Length: 342
Image (tube, rainbow, N blue to C red; front, side, top):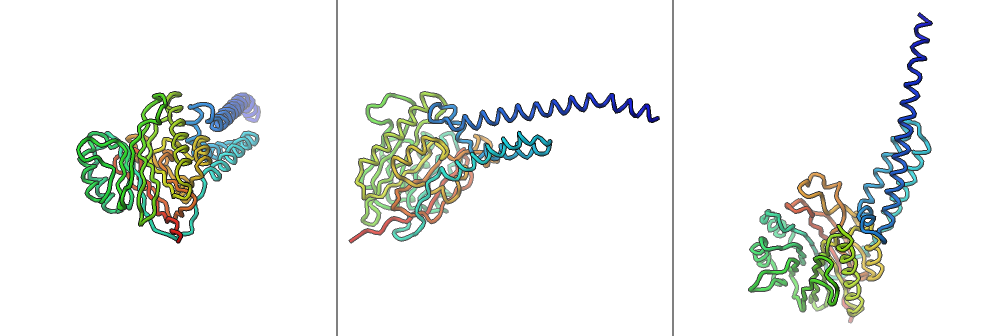
């Protein structure tokens, strides 16, 4: 019996070695792939595909951590170390990317909301109910396409002021305000720029209790090709130039569907050029867009809808709203304007 048991052990030993070698090979191949994807996420300044990968930085951090724990389970310590290093790099970038606004509330309180309603969405009543429930002071909408015109007219009745034209189909970006809109221009493309995809912006000046405030509702092209990626980046450079040309003592609010996450180097470039701060810093960049048709996968989404403010505006709260049928969630924030001097 002892001889038979010893023979069985010798027969099983090559199989155990083969399984161990296979597991080791797969783990280290996965480690190489993990390193490659993490490096790619740092190169969004140069390539549209790398920029897309950077949008998933939170997912990379979690994935790197799970890989490290899996490698530890199989006692592959070097691979686990690679996973922990990748996770640490991603966490550092996550925690330092979003410039935090001031939180000390002093002046006029302002509730701002932005929503990409999705042109093909048909849950019109859900939008109306949300607006009636939240009662924002300023509402910015994107993708108000042809089928949304009647709903846009109903939303208009909830606000004393809007950028909605009276006798023709409205542009897809709109602003509705409790405060007078002194001036508003709908701009589809930067003047003189070559066509690089659909880009939309409404640039308005609001009179908020005697204080002029620049309010910009943006929706640049998505970055799903080199041409569209380049168009989005040119668009944000143009918006930055417009902000730089405005009076320096005027508060600025830029909101909308940016098609740009806080983890992208192009987001960092825009925020550094303008000095704006992101209300999402209070919620650590909660996802705002989920895979179309799968609202249940909300936490697998990306953060591309933003409310940003000039440094003189304080933010006391920021939140992401409920599903209203779009692949984007509403984003809202409570702002506090600076007190008027004199």
